[in-house]
Structures are given as structure tokens and as C-alpha cells.
Image 1: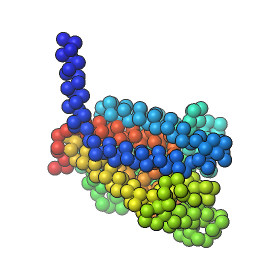
Image 2: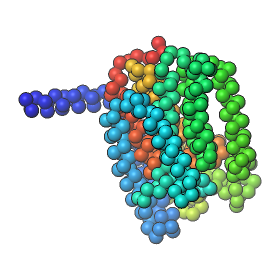
Image 3: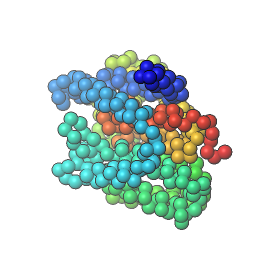
Image 4: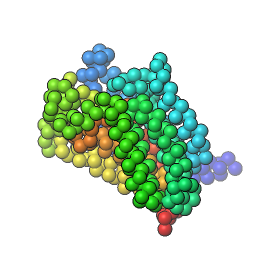
Length: 384
């Protein structure tokens, strides 16, 4: 009997593995491998200068990667509908953690903002967890009833009242980048949910007003916009980051200088292993590796949407679309900042930039997407 049960479990595991979306997993593994190579290449100078240890950030990145793999395993194992059933608890707890970051003595101040909590062995950024539960809530709300979001009174208004609270609290940190990211994902989901155009235009107007108020409230945000509009105005001051980024990107050519041979990472380009790591990818890997990263992100987008289309539940559909858009839009914002297509924001390049919370939550999201591919096997679009 025991042998029979064991054989059945082995068969079930084999059957589940066959259903797993391996192309998504392969795209993720390749992006993570590129991230490991670039962290090894870009972090030695900062590690030696700041900690007298060239491999300080490399060791920490491998520690974060180990935790991230555990998080991905949890995402694969846990039924994704569990997050729907407990979304209010997750949303409230994540919002409270974001509030804690703004309390002096508890939150960690860096780069003019309080966005982190000190856990001792690492700093933790609660907004990464908040982004996940905001998307879960949006997926639950939009799948509750057909065409619910076409009604402003019973659909959009209560929905905006709920998601507006964590967005406003995140903006208070201040963290306008993640507010724009969450808002963009929500807006895309509303488009898919067939919300009325006049409501969407109204939401755009409210969002534009909010961004204007935020920029006028926090002078550094206004300065970033000015630098974006005229990136060569102050080469040794406010424009230094973006000019060095341009230099790194331009010097890579088609094939790049070679892995480890970049020059700008040696105390010229700030945040070269986090916010501006794509610039070093262009310098050392050239046009080929730069386009390769974009291609992997496009592949990730295609596989995420494929998982969504195959979902048998509307909730699974919206969740897969939302999580996929979060990863891809986040990465595109990072790349656009490095290439001065977008004003500077502290948004990491998913799977590649140094950062424990971002890496763990990104791989956790991949685990959730794989769980959807495992549990939602009927090829049925909920909008048919």
C-alpha cells in the first residue's frame, strides 16, 4: 500500500511537471544568470571601497538568491487562490509595514526616502509585498462580477477607494516610481476589464493631478524632471548620473568591451550594480546583450499572457496578466531611466539588479505564475 501511494505521488509530480510552463522558467533562469554575472562584474569596486571586501555584494546576492528560490518554491506550491481568499489580511499587513518605514528609528533612510525596514541580516522593502497584494485585490475585484468595472458607483468608486489608500501611503515615503508602476498595472487591468472610456480618462486626469502635486511637494522630483528634459545642463552635478550612463551605453558598441572589462563601473557611474546596471550591460555586453535582455523580457511577457489565456478562472486570468505586467513594466522603467527615456526612479531591473526584496518577490511572482500554469489547465479565455 505504501509503495502504491509513493508511486501515485511520483506519477502526480511527473504529471504536474509536464504541465508547468517551462519556457517561462527558462526565461527567468536566463535573466537571473545574467544578473549574477553582472553583480559579480559591477560590485567589486564599491564593495572594496565601502567594506574592504570586493566580494561583499556578491556574497549577499547569493544569499538573497537562495532566499528567493525558497520564495519561488512557496509560490509554486501554494494554490494561487489562497491569496484571493486572504487578500484583505495581506493588503492591510503590507500597508502597515509601509507605514512603519516612515517612522524615524524604525524605517531606514536612504537616498532621501524611508522605504526600508532593517531586519538585521538584510533591509526589507515592504512596498514589494504591497505591489503583489494590490494586484491580487485588483484581480479579485475585477473577477467578482462580469462588467463590474463598467459601473462607477458599484465598481470603480469603491475599488479606487481601497487601492487609493496604499498608493497614497507609498507616495508619502516618497516613492513616486512604485506608485506609477502600480497605477500603470491597475490601469491596464481596467482596460482589459472593459471599464468605460470616460471613467478611464477621468482616472488619467486625477493621476496627472496627483503627479503634479507630488512633483511640486518634493523638490527632488521636480529636479529629476528638469534633468530629464535637459540631461546635459549640469554635467558635474544633477546630470552626472545620466551622462555617465550615456557614456557606458555608447562605449559598448555592437559586441561590448567584454564581461568584466567595463570602465564606467569603477567609481564613475553611481549605482552601477542596481539602478543603472543596464548601462553596464550595454557597455560590457554591447548591443547584443542589451537586446538579449529585452528579448527575454518580451519572452517573459508572452509566456505570462499565455498562462493567463489558458486560465479557467477569471481571477487567475487577471492575476497572471497583472503579475506579468508588473515584472515587465518595472524592468522597462529601469531601462528607460538608464537610457533617459524616463526621469530617474529607484526602480530595479527585475531578476538582475542587486536588491534582496526585489529579487525574492520577483521569483515569488514567477512561482505564482507557474502555480497558475499547473492548476489552471483548461484552455479557455474568460472573455470569450
